[in-house]
Image (cartoon, rainbow, N blue to C red):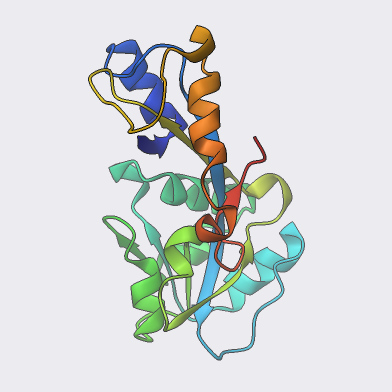
Length: 188
């Protein structure tokens, strides 16, 4: 079984690298704000509160949107929509990937924007919450079986319409997937 973002799974399906009719959405994770573990959690309940939090922060970090990471693209877009691009430039550190929670944990920046699933495992950072309302974004994760792959005890031909993949995904323990609301299992 392969689990990737939905767009990556769709690309693999177009290349015939997945068994036909078996992509199933299994979980999602929001783009979220990180603060240092133990620090007071700032208010990000509304777009205005989030804007004030960013303007009040000494420093922030997120993935470089030019490198294509979704959380960086979402962060950049949110800052632009809030009309604070110029105010944020001098206090923003762009990273090549998922390092923002690490910078927060080390105290190198005050706040970070990343996928919630990248924030929660970092003991030195805490999840403040998803970006509010229309500023936020959820990343969908999907599962599928490789075109040449087999899962023991699993009949991939069952019904010929993907139900067998759904049966395999239902066998996953949702509590194992979700940790402190960073990944949200979907009910199959």
